[in-house]
Image (cartoon, rainbow, N blue to C red; front, side, top):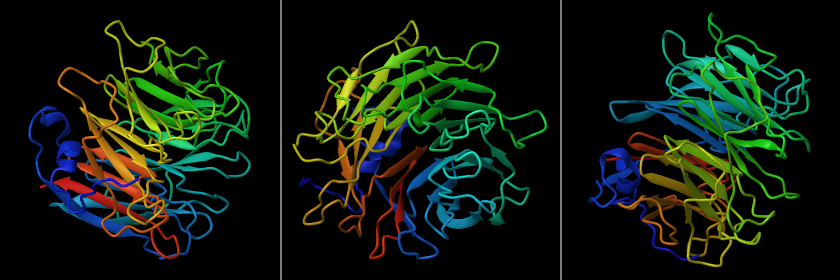
Length: 409
């Protein structure tokens, strides 16, 4: 698809990053790209940027193929300058470390899919007294011993206080679920059983994606044999408990079982976004579906709005999604830019003054300023405050990967 791109972003991320402070119909602030990071090891096929997590001035970048077991890099922002600060390493025996990451200012959770004997774990890193610096090893390991093949850590989410971690475990063909771990009174420590298992009885491979905002968790399923759903769970008054009954099941009104609906999910306040990269009809271009919580609380529903693109090309829009305030950002890693197949792009949609509505016209578009074919820019996305981070895990001649950071001027 050919679409106007802005490499030095004069207004596109002004819309994206003004977010909660700029009304949807106001003139957006000017922003610019403030940093680009590439694989520190410069290793072939490291996939630096396969996952990204961002909270305030802390950024984590998952590199699941680096050093065979994977590495996660931490970057911090001081005085408007982003710099590499720490390197997170897994213990011996872990693999695909960094396939997912989630960040709070003081706690970082990293998913690893091939840990023995559980075939999935989340490693928890707590910020040392001296800050995010040097080479760090995990504070705690989270697993689910009762279900050793659940691929825990395929996805992970954490709120800003760092006291709850939600890990997706879609399994190897079973129901799967979202597993909630609440920090013990003495601080994060190894756990082999979750505080709560959220396992919808009607779901298949639930936990392919997870997101959390406040007391609400969203878990997506992704199974081509059935029509997929995203499930909403709201914390009961007495705290998280295991359940197979979600508060709401979110679906798309024209969904196909090969659309990969709910391969990505995001939540901000009362707004949930669900990605469906092969919508419609298993072909694309893909879409991001918006769901706004009804006044009476979450309930089974189809989308409030469908955000898409006016093209028949397969962009895989919705491979990654993020939402904050009035803005939805959706990655389209298979978008063609000029002659560069699969260079990728990210599209921003701003909520109209009257509320979310169907549109195939994004407000803004961005791609890597030094992008090339097969970069897959938009494979991973994170937003926090006035910053947006977008991963391109196959950037570079040897697929080393890169991440791009944009901020308001």
